[in-house]
Every structure is written in structure tokens, then in C-alpha cells.
Image 1 (cartoon, rainbow, N blue to C red):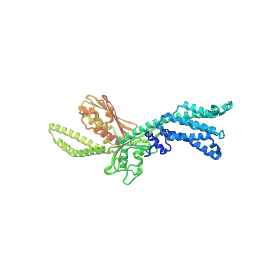
Image 2 (cartoon, rainbow, N blue to C red):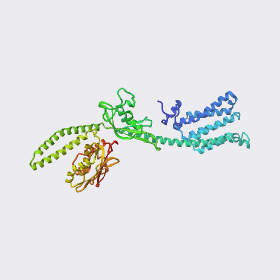
Image 3 (tube, rainbow, N blue to C red):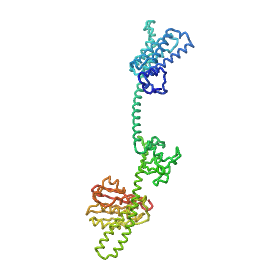
Length: 560
């Protein structure tokens, strides 16, 4: 089996692999290779250059090749190369491989003096062992010392071995080569040390990045939501397993690689295709950010509802680097809500018909009843039947997808008077004072019946949560031609969490439940729907123990 050279093979197998021949992948990290490979590859440049020199001399001057000293030098180089290839370096101490470049200076010296200065530059072969020592892990100081004194010893060999009488010019003339080798060794060791530090940092950074990538991959694939990351050009950068499943739902049958426009993406009605530019990923690519927007993917029994959110990816310089889009399968929630609304609508319809009949006959009986006691009982029955009919109407309104309104120019002042007058008996029963501060001329464009219902709900809600002997203020005015109605109570108030959920259907605050305040949590939700249908706003400001202020604002005519 072929082994990868990217990691150290098991000890004992290195040399066997080497004997079968070097199989080094081009571009492999040299320092990640086994020791045997590094020794042989480090010795190879000197061997190849020596062979070229020999071949050159065989053509130009064969007599030099037959020189005994030169031949011994060449033989020494090939002998050291054979040792580099055959010795089992993994079984020897680490420092043993340094002996090869140190020993190279001996055959190089023999070749230098074997040519008798006929061939200039042979001494430059010393550059190969010097570079080998420079990129090894031998101490830099040792490399620099050897780089200077080994070439110097080669040049001074005749003087050292007393074969030539030393002279001043003879000692000084060959100093250039040792100095060049020293400079080369200094530069090479500095570069090698710098590259080693940089490689170590890159390795650490790569390890950290790889670990983080695995962590991120694990996290997003464990998540129960679909995640897709796109770059600033809209190309997919990352998509988790869940999102691939969701994406497959939107692929039309028979289409292997559909375009964005061909994907089955529908709006809230589950049948109207969403325009490509309005689809969540494209909107995110265009720079939009959103949360909780509903889309339906696919058709038929496999159709699923997705709550989608998108956030932009901004770098440290404020540049857009793409976007993250999250898909959350809310099919079961949507089906449960639909089932609930169907049930409520069905029950409401069934209750409304008999209640309307009861109220009609009660009115006939009350008109003919002469006994005061019986008439009083009938009034109680009628009042509670009307309350029950109002509750049924609220339940029915809560199931409608949209609130239908008919906008006409109208003055809101009479609506405020009627709402306060209608609520006053309930306020009197609880000892609460209703104060109205408004003037005629609150003209706007709205549906009078619906706005009356909204104001009634706000005043009724304020009375419910006001303590005995307190005050409820109802204030109306025009602001920039908009109609503004403010209802303020000084009751129990609400905390921030309760305010955030206040307009949710069927939600009731803790204080409402603990005080057994009547209601099912639909009044404010319906009021919000009415205001939204007019293009207006409904806001609340409340503090626990200090009361609540609701502000209803309807845009002026022509501003919707």
C-alpha cells in the first residue's frame, strides 16, 4: 500500500520504503518528510552538480578527471550520497545526519586541489553543505563557524599539511570564498529561522482554524434549523444538512438544477408563488435583514412552512461580506394555529345564532313585561347575553386573516363621547371616574365602527385594571392632522415582558389571572388588528404599580 509522505511513517518502515525508491509528492512539506528522505534530498544537489562537473570535464579536459586527488574527491561525494541513501537514519541519533554535510567538505577540498586551479569555482561547491547546515536544526552559531573555517581550511590545506610554504599573499588571497560562505550562512540561518517561526505560527493558526471549522460544522449540522451562508455575490458558502433537506422540498419534480425562479416558494396563502426578488435568500443578498417571515416550500402533502430570518455579515471595516439566512420549520405550529382558528370560528358561528335569537326574544318580553321585579331579572339576563355575544364576536374576529375597514372622512370626537358614555356605568359600579379631554374637529379618514370598537376596548381594559376610587383619562387631539387617542389608567401596570406579549391573542398578564379579571385576552389583539388595518400605530407605556398609557394614532386622510 502506498503511504502518504505527509506524516512520519512507523519506525522500521522508513528505510524499506526508501529502498523501494523515493515517491515524494510534488509540493510536499520538506520538513514534514521522514528523516531518511530529508538527508538524501539535502545531499542530492551536491551529487548532481558534481556529476555535471565530471561530465563537463570528460568533454573538455579528460586528463583532469583522471587526476588521483580529483577522482578521490568525486568518489567521496558519491560515497557520502550512498551512505545518505542506505543508512537507517531513524535508528541513529538525530545529530548523526549532521556528519554528512560536515564530511562533504573533505571531498570538495580534494576536488579543489585536484584541479590545480585549472577549473575555477570548484570551491563554490561548499555552498551546498553550508546551506544544508543552515536549514537544519543545528545551532546557527555552529553553522556560521563551519561556513567560514571549513572553506578556509580547504584553501589553506597546502599550508596546513606543509606541502607549500605559507606566504602573506597566499594566506590572504583565498579569504574571499570563506567570507562569502560566512555571509551566505548568516543570511540562510536568519531566513531559515524566520521561516521556521512563520511555519510554526501558520501551523498553529491552521490547527485552530481547522478545529473551529469542525466545531462550526458540528454545531450547524446538529441544529434543528436550516442555515445557509452566502457571500456578497449571492454564492452559497455554507449550507447545513437540514437546509439541504429544506431546499430539496422546493425543487420541482424532474428538475436537477433549477433556477431561483423555478423553486417552489409560496406566500402565506400556500398557492401564490413568491417573486424571485422577494424570496428570503435573494432579499438577504440585496442587503435586507428580517425575522420571522413566513414562506411555504413545496407542494401537496410535502409542503412545509418556514419561518425565515436573515442577518448581514459585516467585517471590521464595515464592508458587507454576505449574509446568513436561517429557515425554521414551523409547519406543526401553523397547522395547530389553523386548527385552533377553525375550531374557534366554528364554535363562534354556532353560538352566535342562538344568542342573537335569545336577545331578540328577550327584547320582546321586556317590552311587554309590567312587573318591575321580573323586568329587572330580564335586564340582567339581557346584559349578560349581550356580553356573551360580544365575546363570541371577538372570538370570530380573531380568526380572520385580515380586518376589513371602510375609510371615510369622519370626526372622532363623537366616537369618544359615545365610548365614554357607554363605559361610564361600569366605571361607576367600581367607583372609577372617567375624564374626557377632547374637542370637536378631530377629523380623519377611518372606519367609524371599527375605531369605536378599538376605543371601547381600550377604555374597558383601563377600567378592568384600575383600583377603586381611581381615575381613567381619555384624551383626544389632532397632531399633524393625524387622529390621536390616549387612554391612561393608574392601576397595576405591567413589566417589560408583559408589554412585549400584550397584543398576542389569548395572552393575559399575571395580574389579570391572579385578580380573576374577566376576559380571554382578545380585546387588545383585536384593537391592534383594527389599528393596523388603518395603517396606524398602537403603543403602550407602562410601569408596574403606576398604571398604563395606550396611544392610538390613525394617519390623516391621504397618508395611509
